[in-house]
Amino acid sequence: MSFETVLTEKRENIAFIILNRPEQFNTFSSQMAKELNAALLEAEADEEVRVVIVKGAGKVFSTGIDISEFPGKTPAQYHEWISGMDKMHFTIASMGKPVIAMVHKFAVANGAGLMLAADFAFAAEGTQIGTTAINVGLLCTGPIIPITYGVGKKKSLEMLLSGDMIDAAEAEKLGLINKVVPLDRLEEETIAFARRTTCRKKPAGSAHGQGILLQNAGYAFCPEICLQQRGFFPALHQCGCAGGGECISGKTQTRVAGKVVFCQF
Image 1 (tube, rainbow, N blue to C red):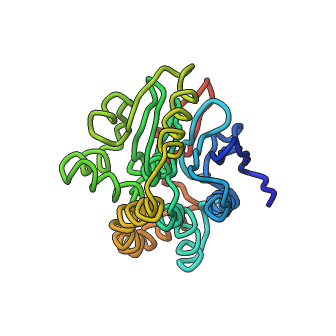
Image 2: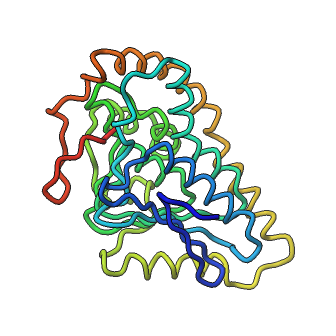
Image 3: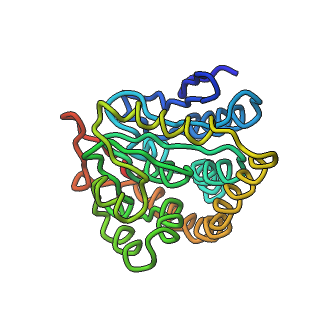
């Protein structure tokens, strides 16, 4: 299957899915969300693939959702829109093959959500991670659920309600990332780990057991994502209909490579 907003490739038994909107800092459009899920399912169905690596093209991993799609939706349209953005959590949770996020520079909002949805995460030194939607009057309801499972109530509430970002070193200490490495070694280290999870001799049935473990770990928080969505849709509608999304204010700007990014959502 061919895609426009993600790239796919296969090296031996490792599938690579590359977020491919570098000029938009790999923000999630509806199309990219759909194509990411389709690419994940395609890798899951490929009998030659045993592990999946997801990474971002260009300067960053992902800076969230493309807010150009935000204004003026009906409640039903917001339901469909945000459900599509959160679907990766359910897709990855349903997979029997491990998914590794390979992140660099920024993984915020829905970009952080993708990193957290993955079974493993490797990050370049200095990568900034955050649930930043509070800065535009909303909440990162999808990403915060796996964060809560990982770090507990107090730190997850701090991240959710402050909108502050943490660096990769702190995220590793909190258990949100498996390993932090220099940028020039990120792909090498991630691939080496992927091969360790797939290339050793394993007893009969171990692949099935691995799949059950991965699915159970992911499904643990999926019902809570659904519950959070129900409370989020009214807020989206109220904010999105207020003058075409005027709650997305200039004071929340973040600069990446000299450009202003309004997409920490």
